[in-house]
Image 1: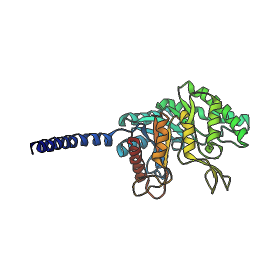
Image 2: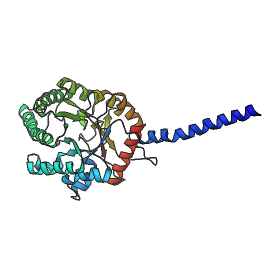
Image 3: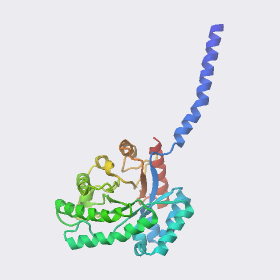
Image 4: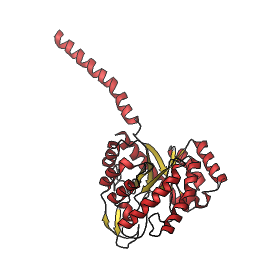
Length: 311
């Protein structure tokens, strides 16, 4: 009986010790930071911005106060005429400092096709981007995101884009800024085309911004964003191919299931790919859904990123 009692006491002590240790271990797993930095893409608030409920100057404070996010990604169309306005940029920078917010990048649209067939048109497009390089440098950004659109065959647009990206990066390197291309429709949504384009530029400061939502290569309307998609590229394969050249990631979301998972993208699978690449940079929240409000969509995307980042 004594032996049995000793065994019982020993087992009880082991169970008690395990119970005492387990909660902190579990708690540590639950509070562990993701392997990447979370940033907020301004496009997540595009409805409020277009409706003039908020302004670009409000954006850094909203990111920090409302969502606890300390890094932001601007969209140039929300301060289109301010790229060379130093007083405006200084006010924006001061608001970032007041809230402890870092500026990651500026997404640049509407400044001409870098893959245009005409050399004069390409040169003008490159020079149109210079002011955004300067603005990004002033704000302390790491990168500008550009498009590589153009008219012509895949080979023709690629050759033109390679030339333009090289020229633009020569200017951006003076400010120690990256030039990164997003998969944004047409040829740029073809994983192999975009990878080949960036490799042909051959500059370490020219990279890719993988976006989880833009992989339609061809639509029945011929438009970039409108119409039924006839041909698309596998998003997981694309991200796997692109991550060695990625200077950021755009975590696009549209819909969520009852458990808070993204419906259109398998986030655990996607972030296994991203982590396996060794990436530890910025992952930007870009909610673009219709069912949830922008506020709800941002919060759900942030919660999902934190969950997969810990896992």
